[in-house]
Amino acid sequence: MNVAVVTVGDELLAGRTTDTNAAWLCERLAGRGVDVERVTTVPDRVGDIARVVNEYRAEYDAVIVTGGLGPTHDDLTMDGVAAALGRSVEEHDDALAWLEADGYTRDDLASGTAALPAGARALHNEPGVAPGAALEGVYVLPGVPSEMKAMFESIAEEFTGTPTYRERVVADEPESALLDRIAELRERFDVAVGSYPSESVRIELNGTDEATVAEAAAWLRERVDSP
Image (tube, rainbow, N blue to C red):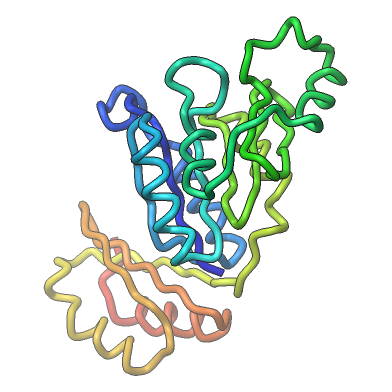
């Protein structure tokens, strides 16, 4: 399964808010064996949201959109997703029923709180108010991290793939000095390799066979200088 993640918000693009949602989703999805192939941030504009969602839903098995839910003037994500799917936005009976069960009355809720793309499956927001939605492989989640995480966990079983196993090797050598050994590692073992230099070099190995990844990591550890 391959997935694209789209985060929505002018505040993300301005650097006023750190996009922790994308990092959390990528880690959680990778843990389920799902390949995240795109992470894109778009402004609070219906046209931008619609264009990116429409492009990605044609390319990937699922698109997760997070941010911009609710009834305020800059909460435009549902409108953008609806436009991408050619749907209208309308009040959702199930979402209203959940909110009423949580103790809200219709008079308590701002207009548009429970408005979702027509035909969408409502996703209940347990720790918050604004509901999410799922439709045609597009999943719309809140931007508040605690709400996003809780809502994703309620649908996590819908995201599955081949488990990937990972090992880390740390080398106290310049990255350039490791090139020959990394090349030999790739020839010997069916693993993907990434190297990330800092004070030392972190070498990440991953693959779909746990024993092969462990064997590759052991082989490399014997051939590098450890910190």
